Image (cartoon, rainbow, N blue to C red):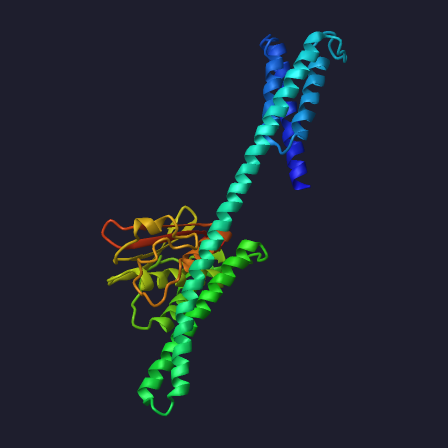
Length: 351
C-alpha cells in the first residue's frame, strides 16, 4: 500500500505540475508548440520514477486527455478526431513502455546484484566466524581434556593456568556470540531501539568498568567536555560499540603505547573518537572494516583470537540504527582513529 500510494502521488504530482506549466506557457509566454513536449517529458519522468508499466501507461492517457481537453481546439472539450492527438498518444505510449521496461529491468538487475553481494558477504562472514570459533573451542576442549586425564599429575599452578585459559576463551566466545546476536537482531528489523537520555559521564564510567575487568593493566586516557552532555540512546548498545572499538585496539594495534577515548561536541552532535599510536590500519583491511569480513587475515596482533571484524560490523550496525555515522582512518602521526557521531538532546543540554 505504501508503494502504491507513492507511485500514485508521483504520477498525479508530475501530471498536475505539467498541466499547470502548460497554462503558463500558453497564457503567460504565448508558447504553444512546447506544451506537448512538456507532457511527453512528464510521461517519461513518471515511467522513470515509478515501478512497473501501469503508472507510465496511466500518465500517458492522462496527458493525452489533458492536452486534448485544455490545449487543443475546441478548448475544454474532448475531441479525438484530430490526427495530432492520436499521434501524440502513440508517441507517449511508446515512450512510457520503453522507459518503464528499461527502468524495470534496471531495478531488477540492481536487486539481483544486491542480493548476490549480500549472499557473498554472508558466505564470507560464515567462513570467517567458523574459523574464529574453531580456535578457542579447540583450546577449551584440549585444556579440559588434559585436566580430566592428568588431574593427579598436574600441579596446582598448571591447573590454574589451564583453567584460566578456558575461562578467557569462554569469555571471548560469549562476547563473539553477543556481537553476532546484536547484529542479526538489528539487521532483521525485529528490534526497535528505545532511546533514553543518558548523561555522557555515566556512559563512559560504565564503559571503563567493563573494559577494566577485561584489561586491568591497560590505561585509557580520557578527553571529555567539561559540561554535562545528554545523549538519547540505547545505553547498552552504545556501551557495546565503545568497548568493541577499545578491544579492537587491544587485538590489532601492534606496539601501541597510548589509548585515548575522546568526546567533543560538534553542531548538536556528540563525536566519539578512539585513537591509538600503534601500527595503523592496512589499506586492504580498510575497505571491509565495517562489513563483518576481514580481508587481511594475516594482519593480526593476536594470532590466537581472530574476530573477523565482527565487533566493528556490530558497531556500524548499532550506530546506523541510532541515526549516526561511523568511520575510521589512519592518523598522520601514526596509529588509527575510529570516529562515530550521535545526535544529542539539545533541549536537555540547554536546560
